[in-house]
Length: 312
Image 1 (spheres, rainbow, N blue to C red):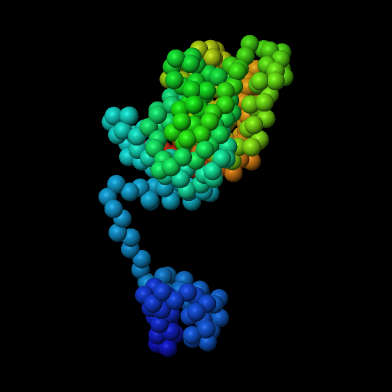
Image 2: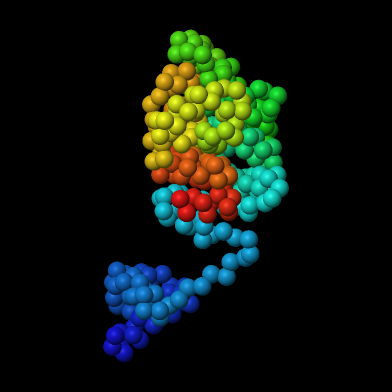
């Protein structure tokens, strides 16, 4: 590189990084196009004329977050520390979720909520700076017993109270005995009204489940072990909102679909903000599938799970 070009690139770099000039202002000042300014700034970084160092506070996971965002084309990944005490992990995740919601929520808008142990624990611990008057809508039928606290109606109620809003209830199990039973329940006015409200949802907060022996889906008694074996045989790695997916995030049709009350995956993908919260190594395949299938645009997870996702 000749000395005059080197001097010009150095001057452009100084104006941009130290002088707070934007690219258009530099081009006007030096009599060159904004495109050429941009090209010279790229060259300055490649030739090590400019080197950027970030002095990040301890306990930040920006490299992990960026790695997942870049690999999967994800809107935002929020990583928290992996604590021995799971309650601390839930608390940290609740803080990140609260911060995210404060950025994206509009007063009076609709939130769709799923079910599960993780969502229950995070909802219990979330804090936001003000009341948003949200309308929280279950987007899946009831799973588990109300007394366990993981039932979607109870999680919806908890979240609505924390956000200064109201919650709706879905008067239907998530898993029914037959397709005929599901059709009857879906045509009931109470169930139909709640399902129709899901069309207004702008933000969905969901968990994911694997189909192993520790799955809450199995422990809740909604499915039998032989049904899980059948799902595994189809290449299914888990579910997002009771939509069973393979490792690429594709919904796999199966004989259980006709018995389920839930918002389908194609409609979930149309929701503006889809936030999934998930931890643990056993959930890595289904989280990774949800990312690959671009079913979500925000992931909240912990350090250990994030490393496993990138290492998969």
